[in-house]
Image 1 (cartoon, rainbow over the protein chains, first blue to last red):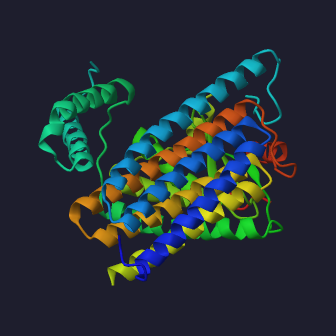
Image 2 (tube, rainbow over the protein chains, first blue to last red):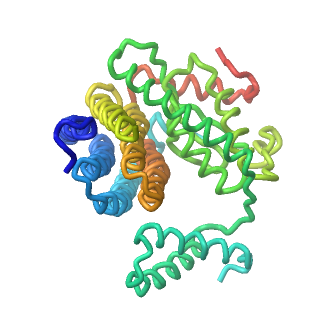
Image 3 (cartoon, chains in turn purple, cyan, orange):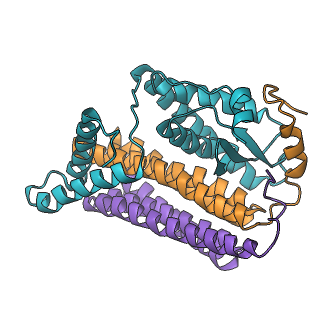
Length: 109
Length: 173
Length: 118
């Protein structure tokens, strides 16, 4: 652990606290978000924030293995987000199959 | 296997994936029993899913692009800061249909990633040759800026032909 | 010297991440929240990772930090693109003042060379 008063230690504590607050705010959107897409975006942001948190903690604790965790987590969380997005797409397409034309957001070719 | 697979493509993929594994595992000697099957699986999936194309990189274009990208990333972060703290900012969002001029898959990937990370634009959907982009402010010349970005992305690869919109737009119905 | 750079990058990176999360709460539209998450979130995490590369100043760490940044830069926009596409096809309600149909008409006239169609 770096000495408590060194600039890196102070900045590290600040960064970890701010990142924690950011994760909580994103969780608020996860709970509140009216559309399913809002929640998936919130999860995507939370995974990016966790990667940042792992990197910041790796600096603060002086332990380099957290960086490996961050890389592995980033890749796996991306897979999760892709799976969720595909699920959303399929359910959206199924909803619109029963309608003759898609919503106003869809172009007509 | 795909008949358009070339020897240089195979060798470059082996190098890239082995290098990635080496970087990720700090070259630990006992990780290779897992690493070699992983690299082989990655190469196999690569040839199965992605179309192997001949992409030639241009170093000068790449360096210029990286600098442009770094500068624009900072701007995009600052732009988000402004929009978050001042919701009354001139916000005129629109879904813009942009006809892509780039042809190769790698170039299009780079373009889509760049557009999403640059201030004011986010790519939404890709239909054929048209990219639907959500722009935050159409008071700005969005298409012109996208043209500039496309030129820069094309400069990263050598021999990158940019399609002319008007010819292909009629033929791709 | 490296320590000061790392400290500055840590503070900046975490502040950008905070802005991303605040944007998620305050922006009025799903797609605009994706803007905030993709741009500010990736920038914040990227700055912290660069700070880590400066802190350790080892070749292996720097390489891995750059790999992490590359993964983030490649995966975050693709994730936003896929979510945006799913939302677009499932008929999501955009912010009321978003130009959709008017813009479709304007751009369909084929006047693509005009940089400022107003």
